Length: 85
Image (cartoon, one colour):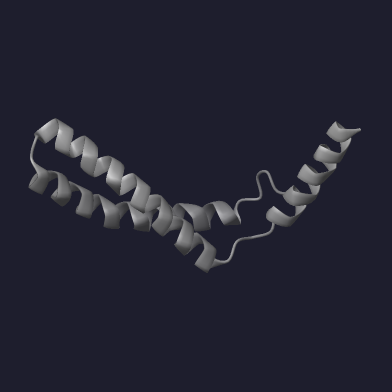
C-alpha cells in the first residue's frame, strides 16, 4: 500500500514538473551549475598547473563560455518533445 502511495505521489510530481520551464528558471539553474562547475575547473587547473593565477584565468573564461552554452542547451531541450507527454 505504501509503495502504491509513493508511486502516486511520484506520478503527480512528474505531471507538475513536465511543463515548459520559464527562461528565468533556466537562467538561475545556469548560474548555480556554473558556480559548481567553475570551482571544479579552477581546482583541477590549479592541481595540474600549480599556479593559482593560471587556474583563475582558465576558470573565468570557462565560466562565461559554459554559461552561454548551458543556457542555449536548456532552451533547445525545452523545445524537444522527447520524454514529455
